[in-house]
Image 1 (spheres, helix red, strand yellow):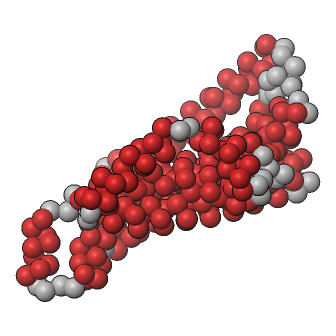
Image 2: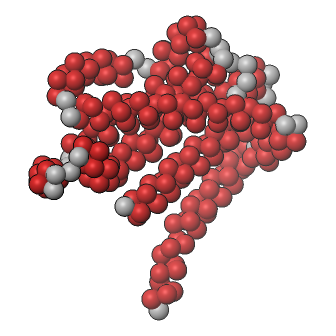
Image 3: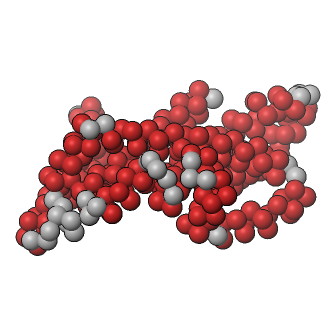
Length: 256
């Protein structure tokens, strides 16, 4: 009885999610057929799937996917690295927080859609401007969660480390890093999904390759099925990145 209940509870979320996705696709197919709208306005799921297969066979989709993925991974790494270092310093320095807080908050008041054209103009339409946009959009959530994670460590833990005469490196390794990891990974999960948005925004503004560029091509040619195929590829990419960070989080926290 226990095994049956445990198995049912384990697979029910996956089953429910699969059924929900299937119903959404069926509803989309019904609407596309009954509305009699042309394919350049609302293609059916079958037309989108066929366009996806043609793009894969032509090698076009993987070429643009690799470009976007490279921008995302580099931007995520760069933004998370600098956010973690600066967040750790801010968590231990109220003066640094007072000095930088106005600039950090002001940077979030400007939408990335408005900032992206400037970055493309300044740094060109190549990969660097897209990596920079990804890094900037990842930076703030990781920074905030790093600060919160370090500052949530009870003072008594630091006093215990002082009593044990731990060095600064030992405090970081055995206390601050394990204690801040859960909150830090919360920000990294958000940053991983936002990095996809950053790359696409940059590619939509100005690029000669990438999934955002492919969306522009489909829009200009009224190839709406290609636009849908690119969007679904981006969704799958965001889900994979989120799941990867989640698995890494579970592995590291379990190891700690």
